[in-house]
Length: 244
Image 1 (cartoon, rainbow, N blue to C red):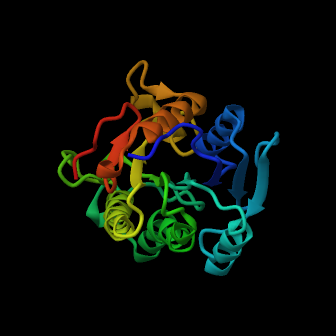
Image 2: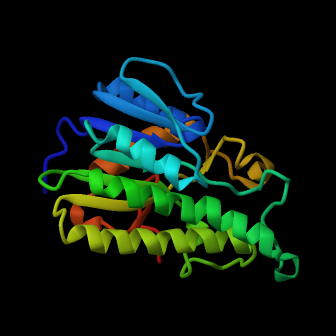
């Protein structure tokens, strides 16, 4: 395995205005990472040495391609997509029954949780180095696991994350043919104290609601530990593989 020492030289965070994304940017900058490309829809991201903001929209492939082009001269070795929605902007939340399914809401959930990260991968994976360690990761969720599904419900959200997990597996297989040191992974951060989880925090057991800072540090430590043979898997904040 390629060494993780001094890794990464540069990093890119897509979703740097969110709780986990912002905390990752801050943690990477504190590590002394040369450049942390910090992407958000409005450009509002943490400030600090080495942080380089850029704007992108998950629904705009041209903008994502332009962001990748901006990084091409000094590309990242680590790319993390920290975007995702559980409740849509109009207040539509996870469906608890198939009777509540609405095509428009399902389409939007898949667009934001699955298609957007996939298009980021389309334009960022070609920038990863072939001769040394490189990592592409995206926030997923345990509820995207088919084998682990015991409760049902949350149909569109579960489906969007299950589809994302399959895409990450596909990308890992394809990238592994040319990038022997690369890792592609999904990340389950647990329940983090962010606006995404706020409506559902009442059922979280004591000690299982994490700060964004704790989550970011745990996920970065996980990424440090993953090996090429782990590529294609989904892992939780504690380093345990999430069943497919």
